[in-house]
Each structure stands twice: as structure tokens, then as C-alpha cells.
Length: 93
Image 1 (cartoon, rainbow, N blue to C red):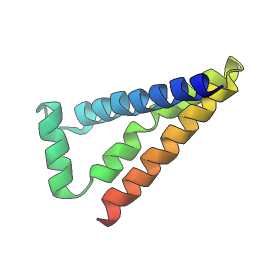
Image 2: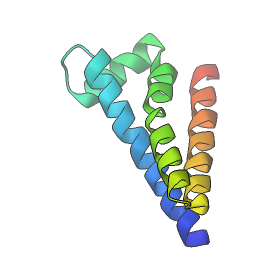
Image 3: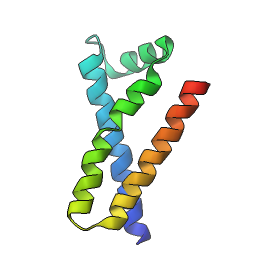
């Protein structure tokens, strides 16, 4: 059970990183990934970019639910909650 939740956590964080990368490529201005993150941070919309990256967690979550791997889906949900808390911290700090 703990192993499956850990796998779900890892999948959730990796899906968010991939989603963040895709969001910076789609919404960025053609620069590299780190430049886009620095620009987003300087302009104050890094929290919105992180939130867009978390959309891929929905795919992972429903994938695990469809395969009846509820503990892995719980891990993805926990990762999404951690990302939401991180986004709130970026927004208010």
C-alpha cells in the first residue's frame, strides 16, 4: 500500500513537471525552460504556470482509477494537493 502511494506521488510530481515544461513551451517566447521560469517568476505569474502544469495530474489520476489502482491514485491526489499548497505559497509570498 505505501509502495503504491509512493509510486503515485512520484507519477504526480513527474506529470506536473512535464505539464510545466509543456506550458512553458506553449506560452513561452521560444527561450529555454529556465528562462521561461525566471521570466514567469519576475512577472508574477509563476503560480499560474505551475497550476497549468498540474493539469496532467488529472490524466494520471483517472488512468489509475480506471485500472483500479486506488492507492496510486491517492498518491497522485496527494501530489496535487502538495502542488496546490506550493502554488498558494508562491502567490502570497
